[in-house]
Length: 116
Image (tube, helix red, strand yellow):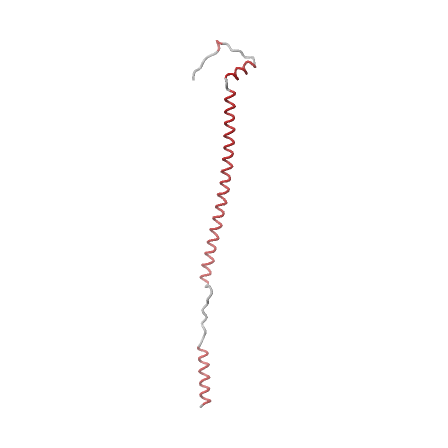
């Protein structure tokens, strides 16, 4: 019986060895988590690029505004200079001197006074 008992015990050992399976639980990241992480990273990258491009556009527009304001200021100065020059050229004394230079004379009968 000892040989029969040994055979039975060996068969039981084989059965128990076959029955015991190791279940391996993955400690890594699942496929769903990978998809979520990648989509979140792409979402953040997209909006980061969007914000940077918007800031670049704002900077360019502000630069254009400053340039246009400078041109407006220069044109305003030129307009004021021309207005001052016009005022100087409109004076009675200058017109009278220019008229004498061209040979014109003043006749009191031809002078009409106009009031504003």
